[in-house]
Image (cartoon, rainbow, N blue to C red; front, side):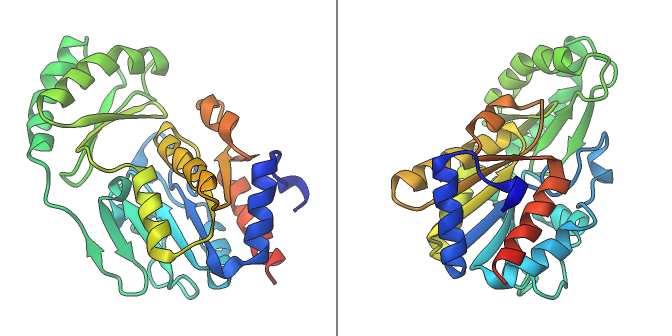
Length: 277
């Protein structure tokens, strides 16, 4: 696959399995930073302009495609432009780390009832941020009543603000039965019980996939990487792709293949579709 050849033996084994039996392959991808470039305001995020055509070219040739994201599923569908696309009937969007689900074939969306801790956290959050110094540039994103995210990317020192808020936000989440999911200059307070790894394993079982490709860019993707490593131990080949980022070195270090952001992910998807004829 030219410049997109895996650099590890496990990755090469997985790629061989994908090319040999694509009808039993699941391709799963994160959204922000993987299919969509990272932007200051998450509401401005949109899938790379070539992402949907690339997915539509690949999807009919494999078992299934899934987008696994921390965003609400409906938001990812809207920002991704995934609805009503020819060739994407087997796409599933697993939102809020797998708690929500949208199926392209039916357009049906399933979502849990809001966790009461989310509203309680939202009510207390201004006081917690004030006690931390009301750091300039820090802002709060509400996720359809299902989670709350505190972003530090706009702060004068994003990493320092991120580290300063980890402990107080962790305490706040714990008081209300939530967990903190760290990401790229963002701390998300959300209900426990699901992560991208669990969501991915469930979808592998559901689809009967016998090989997997997972692409991500963020700390929230580490559980999915761990799930693929677990599948490998059980004899299911898996290809781990990092949508290149200097912000999450651990992900790049565990990947079989590092590509240059969403444009690189799109190029990889196109290459796979071309290889599969």
